[in-house]
Image (tube, rainbow, N blue to C red):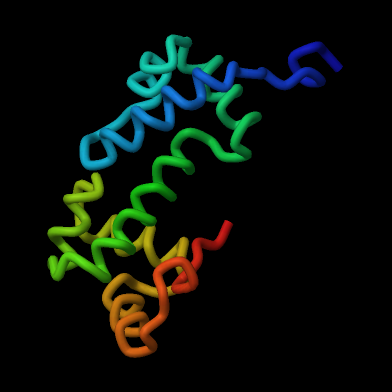
Length: 131
């Protein structure tokens, strides 16, 4: 094995924080690996490896999960349509949003919303993301 295979890339905590803050501030916009890496002051490949090592998720998976978590809050509080929520959290199509939401929560957003409202479930207990 080479050093690259045995030694994970470690990023300084401040770089991770910068990346996470950048993602949070820009969830509604199209984000690419290069954009997030630039915010952390690193090359895309170095950043991706270090981010995965620090968080257990690829930058793309982290971004996807954050978008779905924000969508869940909007589904329960904003009264917006599914289409509006999809675009508000950074998805470019409603169908892609529904596919990702279903994959992560086990049900489409409209059903998830109805179940949560009907059952009065608090957001933190409702429809947890599956890893």
